[in-house]
Image: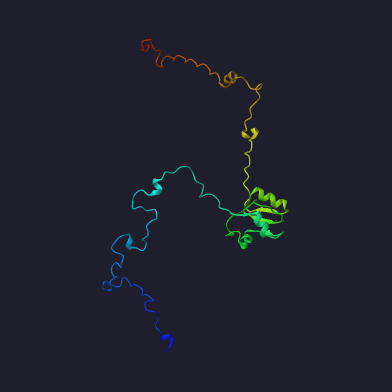
Length: 216
């Protein structure tokens, strides 16, 4: 007898159900999926909040206020006390260094150094952001903090120069002429209308007050 001729335990390997091989197989036609509808397709998965057509729960609950959760930045936090414990003096600390020590999960995600604890070692730390106390403690220990994203500085809006606002300059009050004089100088006097000369004989004659022409 050979070891390859020994049979395995009965029922250890279950045969796969072969569906869609004809009505005589017992699993033909609809292949065990019933009749028509969503359950007959491979995309048979309803939304987890689906309630069969009625108003879902997230729409029945009132909404108040504003949440900034989807816009906030999630930092991986490391304290200066941890750097004091795990780093050697004079070392350069980066995201990759912190990931290698197991202090953060992902070097590609933002990291913020906080000032909890004391720091006596000189370290050159490079991170996404630093708290004010962490920056001060690193500087007091003789090290440097290099933020990858510089803090946003809001510059004050410049005050406009009145001379550059417009080309027209306003004259002093004593040099300004009265408004009445300006209006008088601006408007020109119209010349009197000339009287029309009477027409000569042979050109229709003069008109009588009654509207009839005088015969010549």
